[in-house]
Length: 536
Image (cartoon, rainbow, N blue to C red):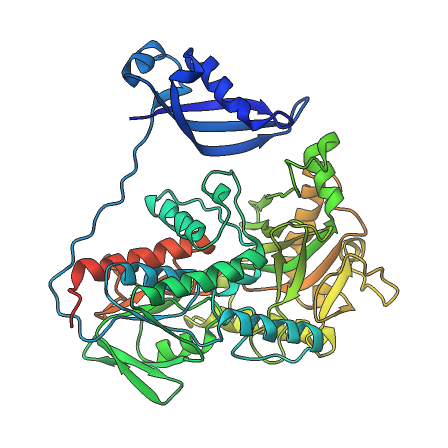
């Protein structure tokens, strides 16, 4: 048994070996009585006169821990350490015909396949795009030339869209599998501090190597990963999945398929709809990317401690609610020290996204500034109406950018006064690749969205000094915040009315972000493991 000790506070400039002394003082035991400790959580407090690191620790001491717990029974910062055990799964008895198929090599698909492989199920992981190294070359080529590869881009390819992002590992879900995912990342090469720091991230540079290593582990455990293998059709007979069709030609059979597509797999949504899979339109958000000098955000968040090496590049998370219109505007996928990048996956449509490397050292902060939209805003009652809604505004942005996947860009001061920015705009803050065209973003977004964005900029400027700076830059459009479609599923994890089909992750409408998508993929694999034997 260990003792959980919270609220251990150390000045950020102090040698971290002083933690042992702090534990000794807190528990009133001698340092030699402390066998060891592990960091459970580390956060930063820069709100007062200095920068402090705040620790939660699990501590082992000589002798009975009960005597210490009894002594401090009224101290809420000292308690029995929580022990989290991962339950061992028992394989089911239903017959598995051929190896299980996992569709999509984003976080959900990778972790579903890894979990299946760990239990000896030898899954086949199918990815429509390329492996991560080739994919990175295609993306860089797009940014430099404006020539889009429709099957290898920020949306499609090994690792999914999150591989070209800030690589945030934060999540609101409370699930023991979160730790399981983080430990798998560490095993694949991530820094160990992601296990305990308050807001862990990996950056696109580290994520690419980690994704590669996770694939190697799946293969080592007996799984197979196939790239350039788009599932163009599901084989469904009498309410049961029988397999998939690859690239419109090859049929691969299995009575178990995990559908872990990304939120931009629009052609797959169409195919599912035509096959009778039950879908529904869902809410998401659209808007633009806003950019500021990183120093502006650092100073607003950390004051005189901006630039402190322990603090790094500052983040923000802001929400504005308009009760009268029953709409929200908020920051999303904030990328400290990052870049705004082209994330299109269809011809003649502009899509923006944010990306940071691990060091977050570009000097520019960016975030999506988006407003909520719902099925009531969409052009029809079709389950796919949200897709058409996204596409409409992406094409308007492409038109404003005047081709080549250039994005419309506008100064905040011009946006707030409804005036198009002109070619003499200072573009030092506009990091978007393949390039930008000064425009009026009111022409690339619905009026109710731009109205919410205008109100949010004013509100956020009062909460975060400099957010409403006239020279901040807006680049549009951001439309792929989450899936516009949900694939309906039952408590068994299977698609509604289709046995053996397990929709999972962000593209299925059940997750948002790397960690929650990975956890949802693991859950889908567990349903299969508990239902089916390994087969031959």
